[in-house]
Image (cartoon, rainbow, N blue to C red; front, side):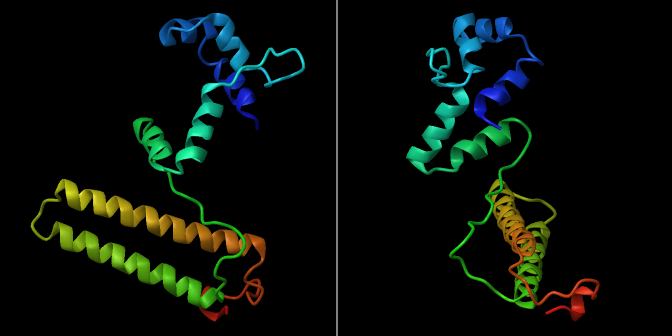
Length: 161
């Protein structure tokens, strides 16, 4: 889905007039955001989503998207890259996930031994959790892409590999 289509759908939930007033921009600009850029008549305009994407590409700083997710009640987890990466057997990959999960639980246990978790401990727990989700996502994607050709359908996970 293109950015202007995302905005067009969003404008069904909040009126462009209200958006323009709250953002301090013209109503016509808000409408231009929901049109394809450079459609031959110059009606589309570089919208905030395209600008944010460009900012991400220029800075290569995931902190921007992490912040957007956080202020909207969510968390950003980077999907692992595709192609050219390390390919492991399914058993090795499963063991890596299990080990990282065990390390994560160990970190939580260590942080909670004094019956409180500091801000620093909380941030470390969040980083470890996001890393674990990224590792697990890589495993799922590898499965979807067929990188684990030795997996046999229907076999219990302990028997696969």
